[in-house]
Length: 331
Ligand code: PBG
Image 1 (tube, protein in one colour):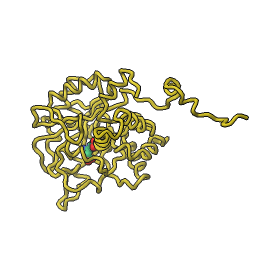
Image 2 (cartoon, protein in one colour):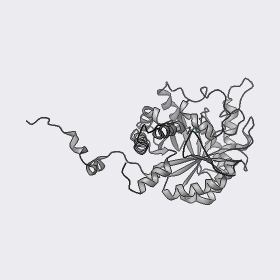
Image 3 (cartoon, helix red, strand yellow):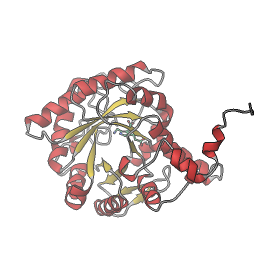
Image 4 (cartoon, protein in one colour):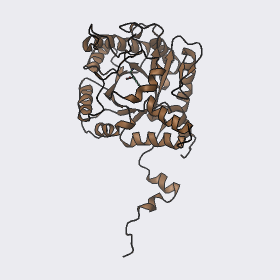
């Protein structure tokens, strides 16, 4: 008997063999590009903590959306930054609020060609930066916030969103939003539920991206990074309340959570993951210092998220990666 009898390296010998046996592949259509549009801008503004990402004007947003669609990305997730903020986030529900205007722009520009998604959360719109409205004692008022989310969902749907991305982690938000949409006849508008969303330090650069006013943290509503089982509970609730898709967020430090959700036979809706701002920033920063191979790290990070079970990945690299995939580039 020759030794070793098993030689797994045979399947790694050439690029062609590796390509044949690869179990995980990235595809442009699986990638969703998060985009920021800021009311007060006349020129797109680069973000220091997210090199390559900008806050858009309404016009530059449209142009970037056309580019993303041409690259074949599966969808766009839009965040709005209003000029005026107040305690209840009024601009979130006004038809001429920046996010709703931008959604209408994009619906007209690229509507039939992509999936238009809207972040459904109040943090960009409130002067205190929390994801909901506050009680007198400063705590986020769950049920009062649900009413704001209902109105926001209806406004986003009217503006042209295909999917509303419930990201505020209020209890009952999916059911509230679903009922509100149905009540106005918006039965075709879907709910993209941030099922398991953790209170993460990796959201850091996003604060710059949306000029966040937040003082403190979101630990009384987003999940504790120490907990695993609760993600299954949150996702089960979202599905029971009518979620059309569910998401795990962040991605890279939560691949166990993602694998749990994606591998759960009770989860019969598509599962997505959000590679968030800090995950992007870490790789860009390390690459800028010459410490890692940027292109390989980008692909490896996205591959790991898909391998863990995400069918759809939100990533700030969506356009670049889609273009490289279409060009047939090996990494
Ligand atoms: C809530 C929201 C946040 C992100 C997406 N939706 C901020 C938060 O929960 O603190 C973060 C995305 C990222 O960091 O890339 N509106």
